[in-house]
Length: 255
Image (cartoon, rainbow, N blue to C red; front, side, top):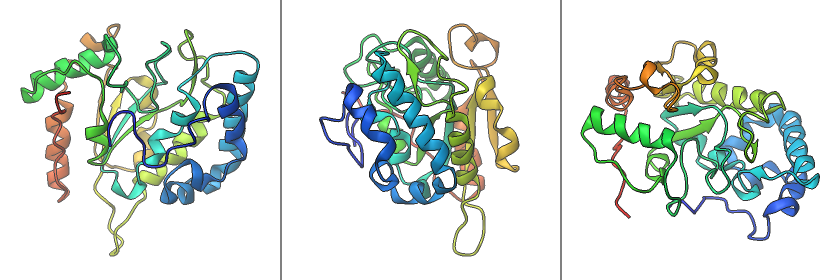
């Protein structure tokens, strides 16, 4: 799966205002992987309210990001496959940047956002892996890395504009679902949470003791206050191995 693909693509016409307008009434199974639909069923009402809010914003003329077909993209990866949760704040507010996966952009986006450039710098310092000129992180999602934002939409040019509009209840339920997965013997499934920034750190009580790596956000405004040097990639692999899970190959393919 590349940076422009998804497991459950919406129709190509589902873009812009028309696309957002159709989301609140679509069955959950058409919007996300089946096990995510089951996990989020208890908050379906809140999810539909959040989708209705976004649809209303788009109808009023606001430029909502990401596009309708990427709004719930984080949930298109099966819940059962998740072993690393990387939690961010809200989507990039720059038009053309947000693709529905936290910190990722499309392969064509140039230059890559500064937060992602800082992630690549830390990846190099931690594991010696070379930075990439593209921002496609789907090679991580293919290995069970859930790239989730705390808030799933934003008004273009207005960072944080959709906080407090209902998304937090959905992502709280999502984090809880990831934490509570068990295998056939009732043992908790392997999981490491990588929490960047205060918004992400707020979910620590939901983790119920699951291993977490908490640091400052990779934004240029905060990266020097604890993100650089935090070694989240090597540390998460060590924690996965301790739980009997395969480590993540954090190297991204060259275009």
